[in-house]
Length: 232
Image 1 (spheres, rainbow, N blue to C red):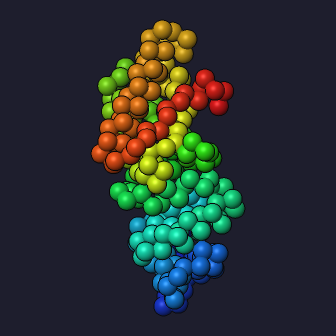
Image 2: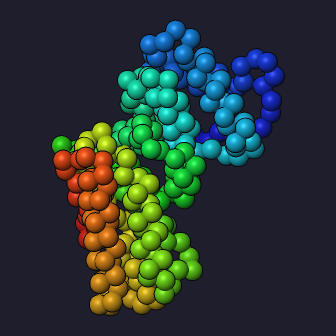
Image 3: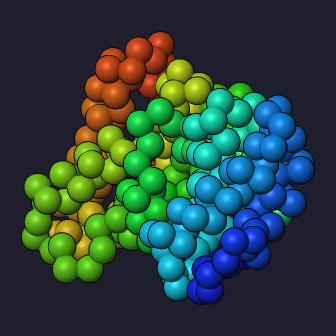
């Protein structure tokens, strides 16, 4: 689903606000009138910041759930994503991004639009989040090993809050890690240098998550896996 605010809604409720208010019925906020107030606020934010821009469903879902959380309706935010996630093709763990205490909405929109970060299933071991390393690196990064590691560090720092609710329990899956490492070094995925680079990127993710766990007080640290090895 893609939304785009292109026209003023005047003094009445706009089409997007009306849609949000109707969809919020499944979340049932506890505050009387909260659904109307929140839907108008989200629409106003989009008109002020994203006029004439196409917005992906994940981003709209993020804004609505974040707005619910901001007015003290965390339970309703969780109900909303649970109810709408399947329809909007968003996995349940996505709620942890919306409710992360240090969430930066602009950074998350950039990551979502680029399809760099995606939520996946929730297992007994916790939520699974996937970072597409190849998309993260982008074109033109050949030979910039240190820059690549800095980019990885920055993204791990940005998304660490998604494991706050599970207290560090979960999985970080790295997709297209081998291809990204090869592209950085300008060699084949099968060369030794490329394998070493992939291992270094994975190790850096582990180190960064451990540091995040210490600063956030997690009793556990997400496991980091290379999805290339697991056939994803």
